[in-house]
Image 1 (tube, one colour):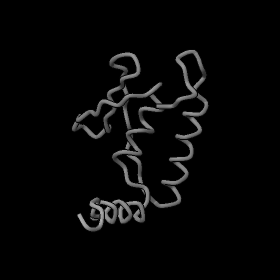
Image 2 (image 1 turned 120 degrees about the horizontal axis):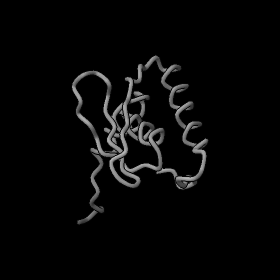
Image 3 (image 1 turned 180 degrees about the vertical axis):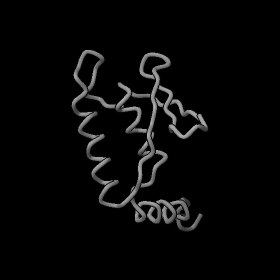
Image 4 (image 1 turned 90 degrees about the vertical axis):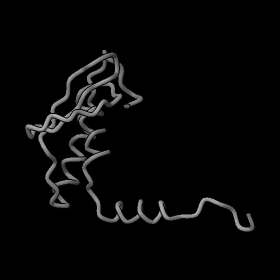
Length: 99
C-alpha cells in the first residue's frame, strides 16, 4: 500500500508507478493482462484479470490503481533474472554453520 496516499489525495504517485510498470513490461515484451478492481472495504480491493475466469485476489491498497499495481507485482513476472534470483534464495540453507 502506498504510504504517501490518503483517500483525499490525488494518487499521482500510484499513477506514476502504473506508468513505470507499463514501461518495464513494454521493454521486456511482457503483456500485462487487462485488470479489474472493486473496492470491498476500507483499503481492501478485489482484483482480477478480465479473461472470463473471474478468480479474484484480495489486495490491501489505497486506491484501485495501487491495487492493480500490487496485483501486477505479485502475479505478473516482468523480469527473468528476478525469477532466477528468487529460485536461488529459496534454495539457500537458513541454518548457521555448525548447527
